[in-house]
Length: 277
Ligand code: NAP
Image (tube, protein in one colour):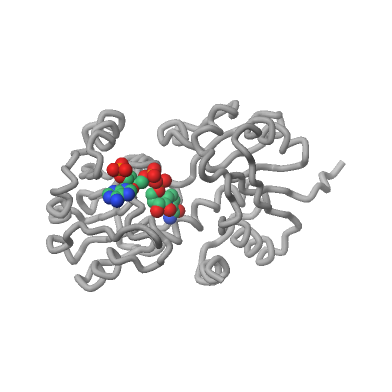
């Protein structure tokens, strides 16, 4: 018998009303003329496990997971991919036909795919990478930089022990630099990544001095609101190739969409426009 069910997926978090994912998935469903729905799923912490376990019975093929449940959802999963284990969080859950709940993390994939699309000359062996920040997003960035073969990573965070802990976990390719010295580490870097929330609307500006920034560096900011952060604006003036954070958000959704709706979607200017509407 043919499976005539309409695919269902969604984004689970608390709150989720702000999420751009429903707009993104609607855009792709329309573009590829697919029957399917992608809905926001707001869930209270006490109900997390019960809701996740019930969704497959309601016909959901999978869900994206956002703040504050990216870590907690690992506890509910039956299988966790290596990259989600390394990152310590999941953003994509697949409800398998055998009933198993499979947790993955596609943030690192999205980060690298965004760089490759928008800075095509970027290569892992271009030189050292400088990473600002040591929170959840930094874990995904570090995991993916190491996975694609970047040999040297300079890491700086306001709270140094968090950066030291990442070095202890991810290994000797990482050198920790004091936050007050963060400007100096840019002199060697051919890739610069802001993974802090600084520069985001409503947050203070990132004030690391950029005088040492190389004009051949690729500079990317995970912050995507605003799209052009001060870091990206100033780096562009120096002559750097700059990549905004929206592409990472779009690319991280590609594996889930393909899995749940059967088409590998393309990220292009129309996709960006649809999400920014
Ligand atoms: P997080 O776990 O809360 O980490 C926040 C980071 O920002 C920490 O390194 C923190 O340093 C630093 N920070 C915050 N306020 C600071 C300040 N006043 N001075 C210096 N450092 C400060 O958050 P996250 O999940 O990693 O997210 C970080 C940013 O990435 C957010 O803006 C988020 O929207 C963005 N993001 C974007 C994507 C995308 O797809 N583009 C994906 C994930 C995240 P301390 O350790 O010292 O507190």
